[in-house]
Amino acid sequence: MRKIIVEAEVSLDGIMNGPDFWGQVFKYHGNDVTDYLDDLLFVPDALLMGRTTYEVFAEVWPAREGKNADRINSMPKYVASRTLQEPLAWNATLLKGDVAKELAKLKQESGNDLLQYGVGELTKTMLRHGLVDEIRLLVFPFIFGEGPRVFENIDTTTMKLLETRTFSTGVVALHYQPDKTG
Image 1 (cartoon, rainbow, N blue to C red):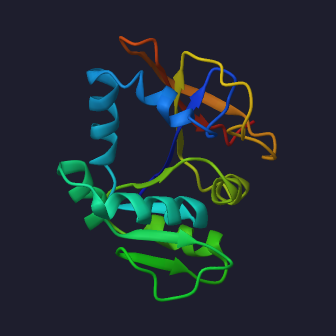
Image 2 (cartoon, helix red, strand yellow):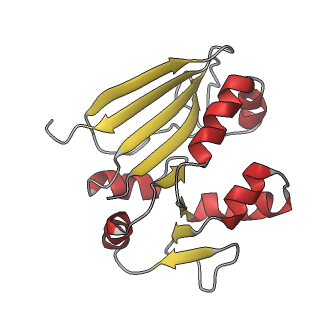
């Protein structure tokens, strides 16, 4: 069975976006952080996205070049949205009907894992239905102060720590698995 991995980059205070947030994040993308993210990109067969991530990525990635752009642009993408209409561009398929059931079917298919970048409504749905197998947080050594918090408005979910890794720029990777016993 395929795993669903959720990856998010956050500040020490749990912020995951905002004006110049990514400008701060990229200051800490040393070679080891970049290698970590590159390795993660080449694990899954497909990307899972909510509407916002899909719209941002579809605007940015098709114009980029290089092995990461080639990988992201060629991968199938499954998009959860109540407002987008088919057909979707950029090798994307709209998940129709019950998103949790559709994702459960995708997990049953043969192949490599499924990856979601960022945390939002789709993550909330997947957590509620026990579909997330791993959450990988990259925590950056700065406090951003305001903006959307990574797990805002998500129900209490107990996690089991799987792995930690510290990078040369002070970034820490935290890998968690939802604890289905707690």
